[in-house]
Structures are given as structure tokens and as C-alpha cells.
Length: 383
Image (tube, rainbow, N blue to C red):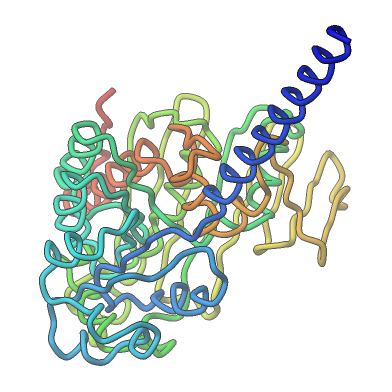
């Protein structure tokens, strides 16, 4: 009887223990999938629609919006999505009253530092639209705040979520085309005015202080970001650039066409960023010793090895190939990625596309390009 009683007690304990594990696991799962408490800082960026369209998805709960311009605060795409009492003129007040976990910045690039300076001491993470900052000093100040307060500052690029780009990274990592010798990146469109960007956006996008430059910043950042990623964070040796104004009547204060040559010890990167393309484009060629890859758009990629016929094409099917420990959603959408990073489901590595380390270097490359164009000289990068 005594042995039977002990067995019953042991079985009961085992069941209780298993039940507790299940409850804890469910609680952890609920916590990781719980919507982020998210606030928006600035509403003048043309990419604000990325937030608007995701509100019904449940990835985040929009708890507050800051915009210091009275007109834009009263009239923007987020009005009617949340209560009127969620819109603030004072950034600090919004952060203290709404207590977001994360702030996403949708104002000018110049304003990114102001947002981080407000969020960092409060322990609030930040995701900014590309690029990270307008100057190297701003980028370094953001990095100081990240280190001091232990927050994350991520940078969001459209091309970070292209399955084709992740396939290129995999092929390069597997040495499918041999050592990478040249990367040519093409980005841009017909121009902000030409494609119909709104006044709130173009007022700062075409300003050399608020945006840091014209096409060199707006589209040069894509190539610098991708090259830094594909080359695993390697630091360039030098930067040389030519910035031009083909349409000074439309863009009198900034460049509208940029060609940037970034030299590495064993690789040459050429970035062609323009508001003068006759079409929209975000494509890239990566050349190795044994072949090359053409990333045609978000979902199409071609691999050439030896022959002038593509060995691998995927014109329709997304090409995402990601490490098994990462949820594919986190590599195809910025807000799923943001939630996973904040919840600790993924670790943002220094070599990742959104990482602070990558994007400080991006700003250094872009600022060196601007300096090179002004001086007509090659700018050496400090090691």
C-alpha cells in the first residue's frame, strides 16, 4: 500500500510538473507573439503607409504619434486609426504617457538623432527609415547612446526584405561564384517630383541638411548597405564619387545622380544611385572568380557560371533561404523582424542589414562620397 501511495504521489507530481511546463511555454509563446507597443515619431516620410497598412495585422499596437508640425499632426495617414488623444506635439510627453516598447521614425533623416536622444534614456528601442543619419557625427552619437543605454537602433531598407537578396547572400556564403571581385548596385527612379511624392516628404528629401544630400543619400545608401552586408562588414579602403545635377531646375540644392566607387582590398563596389533613371529599379550584379549572380528584383535572380545561359532562375517563386533558427517571417517583413528582435527571438548580429554597425559604416561611405565629389579626390577610409 505504501509503495502504491508513493507511485500515485510521484505520478501526480509528474503530471503537475508537465502541466506547469506547458503553461509556462504557452505564456512565453503568448509573450513573444504579443503585439509590440509601438509609437511613431514624425509623419512626413512617404513610407508612412508601411505602418498604416500593417495596423490590422496585429504585429503591433499603435499607442502614440509624435509630430511637431501642427498641420501635419492634424492631417496624416494615421488619423482615424487611433484616438485623437494619441497625437502629441511634445515627443517626451508622448513617450512618458504612452510608454511604447519601440518607436519607428518617419520624419527627416536629420531628426533621427533627436528621436534616439529622447528614446535611449527611457530604454525604448528605435527603428529608423534608411539611412541611419545625415552625418558621421550624428551616426557616432547614436552609437554612443546605444552603448550607454543598451537599446537597439535598427535601420529599415526596402531591399532588406527581398528574398532574392537573401539568396544572393547564401550563394556568396557558399562560394557558388568564387571570391567576390565586383558588385554593381543600381537604385533609384525618375525623381521624387516625377513619381508624385508629396510636399511634406519632398520638402526635406530635397534639402541638403534635413536629408544630407539628394540621390546620393536617398538611393546610395542601398548599395552601401548591401555591399557591407555581402562583404561581412569589411571596411573599405577608399571612396570616390561623382555627384551631378541633371535637373537643377527641379533639384537646385542637391544632387540628382550619383556614381560611387568603393574600393576594398579584394573587391570593387560601384553604386549607381539616381533620380534620373527612366524607370524604377533596385537591382544588383555580384561577380566572382567563377561566375556571377544577377539580382533582378525582389523575387527574381539568375546565376551564371561559365556559360552565358542562366543555370538558376526563379521568376515567380520567392527565393528565401534562411538559417533554420530564424523564422522566415523575420527576414521578409521589417515589423515582424522588429518584434522578434525586441522579444529576443533573434539576435541582431553586427553584420546584419539592419544593424547599427552596418549602418554607421553606410553613413561613413556616403559622407566620404559627398566629400570626394566636392574635392575631386579619392577619400581614404580610416581603419
